[in-house]
Image (cartoon, rainbow over all chains, first blue to last red; front, top):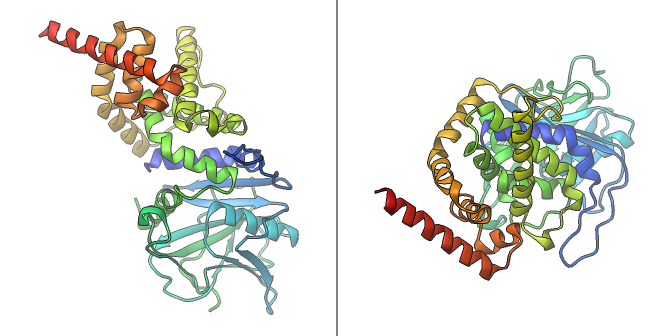
Amino acid sequence: MSKFTSNLWSDLVQEHGAALAHADRPEPGRARRPRILAGSTLALAGVGAALALVLTSTSGTPASAAVTVAKTSNGSLLVTLNRPGAWQLIQAGQKLAAMGLNEQIAVNMGSGPATVSGPVTCTPAPGIPNQPTVEVLVGTNGTEVINPGTTPGNTGVGTFHMNSCTLYVPSATGTGNTGNTGNSGTG
Amino acid sequence: MTTEARALVRTMRERPVAERARPPSLPLEEFEQVYLRNVDVIMGYFARRCRDPQTVADLTSETFVRAVEGFAGFDPRRGSDRAWLFGIAARVFARHCEQSAGGRDAVARLAGRRPLDEDEIEELAGRIDAEREGAALMRRCARLPEVERAAIELVDLAEFTPMEAALALGVSRVAFRKRLSRARSRLRKEHQGNE
């Protein structure tokens, strides 16, 4: 995808992600799927030449969600994603909102395994309270592996890690790339 | 582009493609797949018609904004997503032509119209160049009946299957094949006549 098409996608999701999340789509051979329960906003923010996933939402997640949010013993919130796709981030936003945290999460992914195992601590954008601390863990140790044979045509196969994540409010788009670098969070 | 930017673009461009053949579970993912499958051909459609990168960008953007707005009503059982998007693109372009003739901004409704940066202008200018032959072919088709011109563009330039193109144009497959064949034959004769 070119820079233009990446940026266009980011703009579309930022402006219309919420409407799409609510769209009631027909499916071939099946009844219409139930609506997502409540409002959500998905944004893909362009940050310089980069893109980051940013989103927030308020409720309702499928039972099969591979996203968990848990309070750790030190009071921080640990978000675990089996894969950091758009819907997983929506689910994470929904779960954070249910816990009273209405900021959005932006993630920045890179190729290769994580250099340090464990979650990445999200950096609040300017103006966002520093508490509670939010950490995001990809997979079980910070590295996501897409194995051969798990995707059609083996496209997208590889190893990936999170470079950074950021918390920010919906109106502050474009601030989603200020997170820390590498898996420098708790191990 | 920085390493970080490349990595981010990778997440946009490789991961969704990897998931393309998997049945999408949500409208957002479904639309993402529609976008990935078609953004390039829609951009090509406008690049064959406009020489200004910003206009190509605006019209491509406008097409997908309308597609997002109408996605709830799009039923894949009634035709391919590409045919559906081409229908939208054709209407967007027709409106652009009408409004350009009237001196108005054809894409004024696109909220927050974003000026392109230099990289994007370069990319789109490259795309317009790449479509030069296609644009020339379309000019040669100018004298063909509308449906024959559309048949040539959809199959020979936009990579529709004949069945998809027939659906997009609302004609039977048999009728479409006849029109396509007739259009190609006319172009060949015209080309030979010019030599």
